Length: 142
Image (cartoon, rainbow, N blue to C red):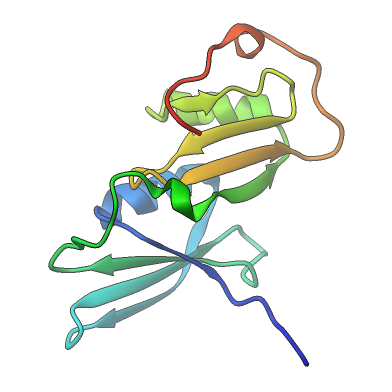
C-alpha cells in the first residue's frame, strides 16, 4: 500500500481574516478553487518552497453553521520557525494573542481567527529563556 500526504483542511468563518493570519505565519496562497454552484472556495496555503505541505482553508460563501466555537477537537497545526521569539513578537505586533508563550525558548501556541490551535516550534536547539517570554502567563486555551 502506498500513502501520500495531501493537505490539512480547516473551515474558516472570515476568509480574509484567516488568510491574513496565515500570511503572518509566513504561508502564501499556492492554489485556489472557487465553486459557484456549491458556493464555496478552497484556498491552499503553504510555506514558501514547501508547497507539498499545504493547508486548505474551506470557506462557505453563505456561512457555516457546522463550524463550532471551539475547534479543540481538531488538535493543532504545527510549524517550525527559525527564531521563535522573533516570530511571536511579529505575531503580537500584528494583534495576535500568544496563548502559550515560548518561555522555554522552544514552543508556543497561538489561535487563528477561527480558533484553530497553531503550535510554533523552534528549529534546532531551544533558545535561551528570555523576557518577556519567560514570565508571560498563558492566555485562554492552547
